[in-house]
Image 1 (cartoon, rainbow, N blue to C red):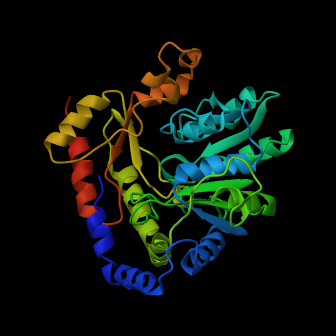
Image 2: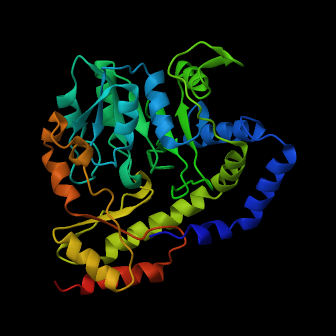
Image 3: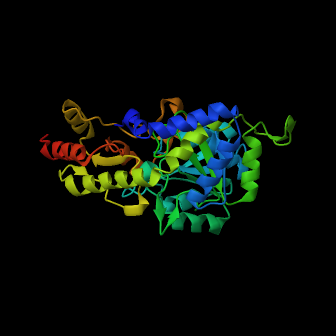
Length: 362
């Protein structure tokens, strides 16, 4: 599904130089490397500010807290995105309210978001699933109409854009993950909140380090220990310079799959140009498990992202949340299959995958 060793070996000398620079500096947390990356990444996203954090889930939680979400509030979110956002929502003591997806894009449907809005709604999360930008003009208009903060979950969508406006620049705040498999991945864990609201930035800056206003002086509840370290920031700065090239390669693979998979039982993801950065290439198949087995027998790794909707998780068995019904989400979760798609995968490799699918005779 991926080859992180090959991915990082291609820029080994640059990564080694950055590592040595941090080691020689003697500064390992919240220093100049973090500040440099925060400045560069905010500018790259088209936002005013960035606050580096320990991981992407912390980024969602701290962003929600900074947007005013508290215990007992409701946050509208999709149910098909691995439960990462719901984990952050529940950590605050708020409640996820699940909206259905657009079956064509697998992203949250703004029309169903409108159905879910109540007097307790305090935020909407737009998860750009698999690398495709949500319908942000519609979600932005809806959030503005009701005066509800809009948080982007950009963990899979570094660089996805519409009319030149990137993921991370549409919402009141945006949460990013730099987990090693992400389009922009560290050599460990990392995350960030990006925003053009100064009040959000100031609050997240407090919350990432215990709620400190100054050393040992706590002025805000809900604080955490969530610092992006100097080493990961330095490595991310190196990788940021290569991200546009890696995105072009992912998009070339996405275009190839869309144009060359022709099996009548396999529904491909249409090529979406700048809207989609192809963190994952996901097809749909009514006989998904058979196709997965067939490809595995031919040495082709596949996966399912994700096999459970949030409210289908065993954790919630017997609870009221398990009675949620989202027809489009429930249909998709039975059919989705992820194909290999990463910058080091050659077109010849993608052709082998496409040819195998086209030759499948169930």
